[in-house]
Length: 323
Ligand code: CP3
Image 1 (spheres, rainbow, N blue to C red):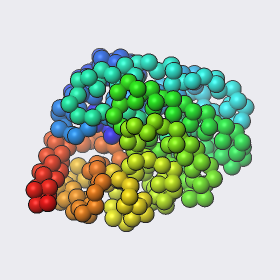
Image 2 (cartoon, helix red, strand yellow):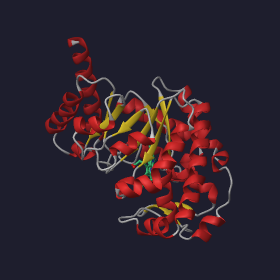
Image 3 (spheres, helix red, strand yellow):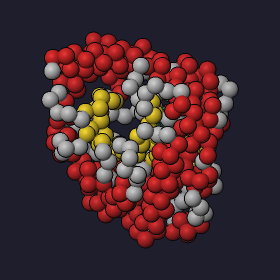
Image 4 (cartoon, rainbow, N blue to C red):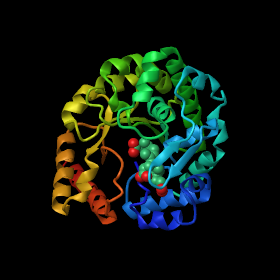
């Protein structure tokens, strides 16, 4: 995730010509950025250049990417009346440029392309808070005080995420990832009550022909329920021991993770030692996808990422040779 970004000079060069939203809305440029990141890093799969919040843009809530604050929603949805006023459109039908970027990227890649969407809870948290948040108090207030409006909002988002991912798959995405980045702010009780039924409906309604990745962070208290929610692959962040996390997810599922992205800021030998520890933990169980536990940090030196990718390839090849 976050393969292309401001840490990468090739990205910054393209980004000078467009605002972030313009870049997302220009399929040729979005595809170029997607493909360049793969070439530069040598990774085994590409992730589409887009953003989880694009799906909210057609709702007319005033999405903006500000230079200092990150994403902002100028007209947040905080009350049952606000939820009732949301246009009941198929927002996914309004994003043809994303599907075109999928098509163009896929045509220019030699590795599989991962499409993605935000998960309903994480999308709702941006809609309700109006941006990033530390404690998610507006979101939880709506959830607790107006559960009917909350479930209505979540159902609406599930419908849209299903439709969005279906279209990405039709356009050529070979796997899809669902980002529930901020779901770790919830208690297990609240997850079961307010999120899990929606995740089940979401995964049950994705086309079965491509693998699905169910990602979250801060999920150490929720792993069994993430499994229950669905996904061919469950993401693990670095706060959980890989084997203990996998055991709770179940060894019959694949996992993805779980190096701390901050490890890329340390000295090279420590970085590779930590990567080796992840790989050694996973050894002997089929179905581990090496990845960071969350997105790459803006301060990351690109050659550290390249060294990490090369190391994982060498390790995997030599362990395959050893049988
Ligand atoms: O090639 C890639 O990997 C990039 C594709 C990608 C972006 N956002 C581009 C982006 C992906 C997979 C995302 C997902 C995303 N977006 C998530 C889920 C993953 C996660 O990290 O948890 C979330 C929560 C968002 C919301 C979002 N978009 C935030 C919080 C920000 C600000 C972050 C920042 O570094 O400024 C964005 C903007 C954003 N999305 C950028 C990029 C490259 C930076 C925008 C810029 O160029 O100015």
